[in-house]
Amino acid sequence: MRLLVGLGNPGSRYARHRHNVGFLAVEAIAACHGFGPWRERTKFAAELSEGALDGEPVLLVKPATFMNESGQAVGAVMHFHKLEVGDIYAFHDELDLAPGKLRVKKGGGTAGHNGLRSIEAHIGNGFWRVRIGIGHPGDRELVKHYVLSDFWVEDRTWLEPLINAMAAEAPLLLKGDGSAYMSRVAHLTAAPKPPKEKPSEGEPPATPDRPRSTDR
Image (cartoon, rainbow, N blue to C red; front, side, top):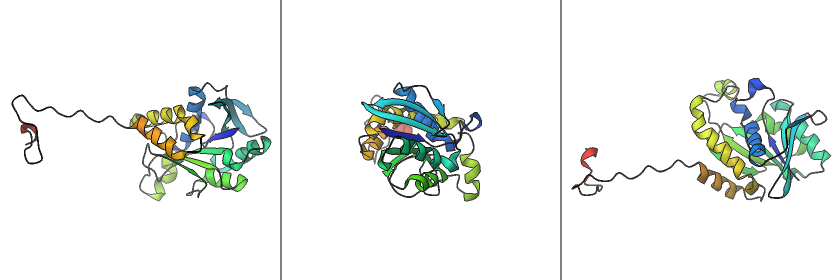
């Protein structure tokens, strides 16, 4: 069994916050792959959804402890099911990645992320991080307000395609090849290349030293 954990804060007031993009990711996986309904499990302080990816049993987890205590829920579920630290995948927001970028790594630091810090304190360092870029507001003083604010309307142009691609390719993530998962998601979310402009009739093709008449 694998544990896919979305990091975020519980409650409707936080649902569209940047800090909750991990919740959005696991919710999309559940919907895409026909997982069971989300159920509150007070013994784990979390909401759980059960299913499978390519035949591998998977438990999706949304901690109900608020971000700073996420490790409490993750540790409880992991120990109950007798899982290894390497069976855990934490989906979380990442300030140090541009919006729409994705990075996957097993182990590593917490980069100041309180949810990751809590998980590390409860189960150790060797779990997988699925880092979802939300960008940085540019000033450390603005970070708290930024992550605890809703995504902007214009963010939908990258957020929805990214979350959908991450969900669709989730089985690839469990194969242990983070690079392949990142590459596939990047391919699915790449902006289409604009068509090459055809030269006007009777006009020779543009070259570096001969621009089209419309370029002058």
